[in-house]
Structures are given as structure tokens and as C-alpha cells.
Image (cartoon, rainbow, N blue to C red; front, side, top):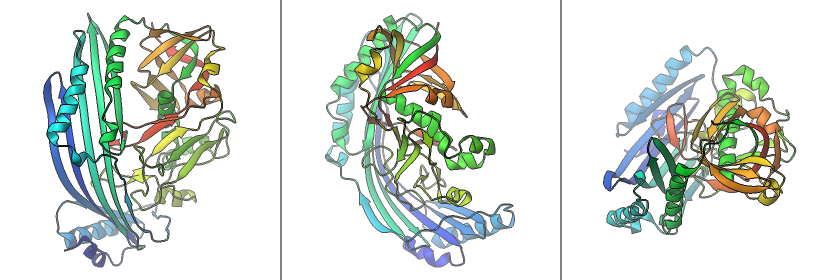
Length: 453
């Protein structure tokens, strides 16, 4: 039975959608001279989501008992509607019929598994050093073929190829450990993972240099964030606060995140845009069949938008933004970011640092957390800025603060936007590893609390 036969079993629903997905994946991890993981797999999954009189029903499947799946999804929705204290609904839209295909320059299928392993081993061997206690290279390519159908008459097919690689090293001297990592990943093919010898050498050298670097002294500094860390700041500290399902469940924060409120200088704009081809968060159509588009969260320092699913848009009387995403058909879509970035402005990096007598240049992202408007980020590495020049490497740089205060303290936005994806991803609601990209230019921020010795 063809999956479209499901349509005949869902009559009576107020709205329904059907997802079918086939995923072909090659993944491998080579660490300390050993293959830790090697897998080629094909998975076929699907789901049915039904809205009936204010209640949702959801069934995921990997078989072909379509009549049963459709019946169960509709029955679940009917049951939910009886106990739904607050009826739920969605914004409707005109049907869409389209096919989207990404076109890698060099298809991963043109490389044998042995060739991919050879590439990974060559990078791994470059990371070897007596003071490196662990080196690992992770590779993955995925071809995802999806079909989306709904009761509005939409039919959206997508064929997307994602390829990426990551390098990770841990250097050790006595009881001191220092880690460095690099990850590349987005929609494309083998062209993304070839000729990365310089990246491998860079992270090996950085991990060894960090063993000799002094820890930063704790204090309040003028800080310059590099494009990777500024993008992570936009994503973690502000992007999650802009997701409408979070706001709908937190009335106090909804009041704080009131549209029209100023949150930063007039030269600061933060964007989420799923329509940018090839970036890791490329979402031409989300998992509700809504086209990805450019949504300004901050425009010239003013809060102008938030990220929506069809349901949150209905609740708030706004328009869907193409941000309903699920990590796989096993899960229902929730509001997620795509490609989130700070728009560039007009300040060159050299001009940004020349007036800093004593500051910190914080680079890349090692870890951290956010708690509502509070954040803590660990830079992967950092340098002191002395008398307008980049000086010595320092380690253990942890940035903390209130996101709203920090936005107000942004003094300059660079002219050098960079986007970054990678093999990792964003986690939310039990759905971890969703591909996203972060981006930004350099940022100059005053009065930043930096933890250290």
C-alpha cells in the first residue's frame, strides 16, 4: 500500500499531516589508532499527526500497517480532545507542491568506505604527539529523503545530503588537561571534508600551547568575541528566549520579551534564517510544511519577532516562521532555531581592539549553559589584549552575565560575518543533535565578568 493511501483513512480530522523519511548514513570514529565506531545504515520511518477538535494525536511507525497507524492517530486525537482544557489550533496556509534537492560538488557515494576510512586515518595520524593523550576523528555523511503530505493538499519532497567531520584532541602534562576541537559540517559532499590538514595541525598546536598558557585572572574586562563565540552567544543566550513555545509557557518571560522593547544598540540585529542554502540549519520547509524564511529577532536593537510553529503562531495571533522542526519522524515538531546569526555592521577587527588597554579576546566555544536570561560560556581559547594588540594565549576563560545587560554593553559590531555548523547540533525537549548553524561578526562588549584564578 502506498503511503498516500493513508489519506483515505483520516477523513473527519480537522487537520492532518504525514511524514515519510528514508535516511542513508555512513558514520565512523577513529580514535587513538582504533576504529571505535563504523556503521552504514538505512532507516525508514514515518509519522501521522492529527488535529481533531482541539486535540492532537500522533503515531510514528517503521512498518506498513497504514490503516492501523491512521486509525490510532485519529483515535488518539479524539481522546485528547475530550481532556484538552485549552483547545489547540493552527494557522492554515495554501497548499505547496515542490521538490527540493541539494547538490553536493562531490557525492559521498563516489567514495568507498575504505577511502573514507583512509581519509579519517590520515587526519588522525596528523594529531599524534607524545603529550596528546587522546585524538579522535569523527566522520558522517547522510542522505535524507523526505515526503510531507497534509490535508491542505501540500506535497513536499526533499533530498538533502549532509557531510561533516570533526577533530578532537586532549593534551596532558602532569595533572593538567587541555582540549581543542574543530568541526565542519553542512549540506554538501566530500568537498567539505577534503584538504583540512591545516585545521588538524591548528588544533593539535592549540592544545599543546594551552598546556603552557597561564589561566586568566578573574575580573571584569572589556571583551572581544570572535565570530564563532558571538554566534553561539546569539543562539544560546537570545535565540532560545525567542522560541515561542518557551514564551507561551512562561508568562513572566513573555512580558520581558515584549515586542517593541529595546534590547541593544541601534547597530545590533539578530536573525534566524532557515532559507540560506547549504548551511547546517538549512530548512527550506519545516516539518509543518511552512517555508523557511528570514526572521528578525532583533532589528536595530529593537525586539521585532519570535520563532513560531503553526500552533504558537495561532496562540499569539502571528504568522508561522518555518521553525517547527523534529529531529526525526519519531518525534513531533517543536519550535527550533535554524541558522541564527548577528548581522555584520561596520567596525573592522583592528579598529575594535586598538582602543583596549587591557582586555580579553575570547575565541570559539567549549561549553556552557543558560538559565533564562543568565548565561555561562567557556571559550575554547583566548588571548589577552594589551595596549590595542593581541598578546599572550590564556586559558580557563569563562564568561558569565545577564544577557540583557550584556546586549546593552555591546559597543561595536564587526564587518566580518562568519557562519559555522559542524557535526554537533542543538538540543531541546529530548531532541538532541538537530543541525543548526550559528554566526556573527566580531563583537566588542564592555563590563564582562570573566572567571579565572
